[in-house]
Amino acid sequence: MADSAEAAEAKQKEKQKNKTKKKAVTVDESELLTVPDGWKEPAFTREDNPKGLLEESSFATLFPKYREAYLKECWPLVQKALSEHYVNATLDLIEGSMTVTTTKKTFDPYAIIRARDLIKLLARSVPFEQAVRILQDDVACDIIKIGSLVRKRDTFIKRRGRLLGPKGSTLKALELLTNCYIMVQGNTVSALGPFSGLKEVRKVVLDTMKNIHPIYNIKTLMIKRELSKDPELRSQSWERFLPKFKRKNLKKRKEPKKKNTKKEYTPFPPPQPESQIDKELASGEYFLKERQKKRKQVEEIKAKQADAVKRRQEERNKAFIPPKEKPVVKTNKASTEKKIDIEAIKEKVKNAKKKKLGALPVEEVKLKMAADEKKTKKKK
Image: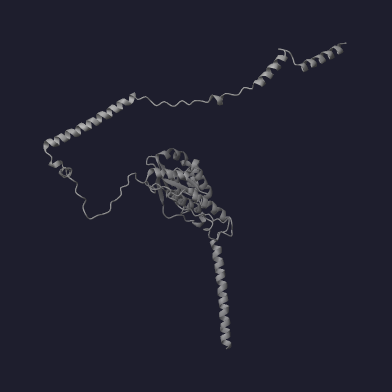
C-alpha cells in the first residue's frame, strides 16, 4: 500500500513539473514572436565574411530613351554610392542598358541584389535621391506590373488615375500610411520602403486595378495604424474593428428598345398564305368577266382620283379661311371710376381764399416781430 501511495505522489509531481515547463515554453514563444521596440538587426560587416566572394556576378537592365539625359547627369553619384559596397556600375548609352558587377573586394553577397534593384528603379523613373535608399538594410522595393491587369485602355487609364487621386492626394495618403515612396509610371508602379508597407501597397494597387476604390483600403490602414498604438490589442484579432465594404453594382444592363418576344413552340408548321386566286375566289371576282373586271378597276381609279382632288382643294381653301379673333373683354367703368368727395374740395377752396398768395402764416409773422423788437432794444 505504501509503495502505491508513493507512486501516485511521484506521478502528481511529474504532472506539475510538465505543466510548469509548458507554461515556460508558451511564455518563451510569445516573447520570441514579439520584436522589442527600437530593435535593429546588426549591419553586415567585413568581419562576417573576411574572404569575400568566390565568383563574380552581374545584372543588367534596359532603360527607355527619355531617361538617357537624367541618367547621364546622376551616373557619377550612382557609381560613388555603389563603390562604398565595392560594386562596379557601367552605363551603355548606345545599347541603352545599365550593368552592375561584383569585384574581388565585395564582401556582402546581398549587395549585388540591392544594386540590381537600384538600376531597376532608375529605369522606372524613380529619382536618384529616393532610389539610393535601397542600399540600406531596412529598405526594400517592389515593382508592380499593372499593364496586363485590365483589357481596355480607357478603363486602365481611369483606374490608374484613381491611384494618384485629385492633385496626387490619394498617392500622398498612401505614402504617409505605409511609409513608402510610390511612383506610378506607365504600366508599372514602383514602391520603395519597409517590407510591411510594401505588402500593403501591393494590395492597394491590385485592388484598384480590380475596380475597388483605394479610399476603402486607406480607411482600413488608418484604423490599423491607430490599433497598433495600443499594446493590449497587438496580440488580438482586429477583424471586429475593420470596416466591411460591400460591392454595389449600380450600373444596370441596358435594355433594348425593341424586345423580341419568343413565340410558344408548336410542332405544326405555320398556315400557308393565301394566293391571289384564293382572294379572288373569296371576294367573287374570279367569276366575273374581263369587261366587268376592267370596269371595276377603272371605277376604283376614278374614286381614288376624286378623293385626291377633294383633299387638294381643301388644302388650297385653308389659305382663304380667316383666323379666329379673340373676344373683346369689356371693362366695367363703374368699378374703375372713383367717387369724388365734393365737400372736401369745398373746404380746401375756402382755406385757400383766406390765405394770401405768397404771405407767411400768422405764427411765423409773430416770431419775426418779436425778433425785431429784441434787436432794437439791444442797439439802444
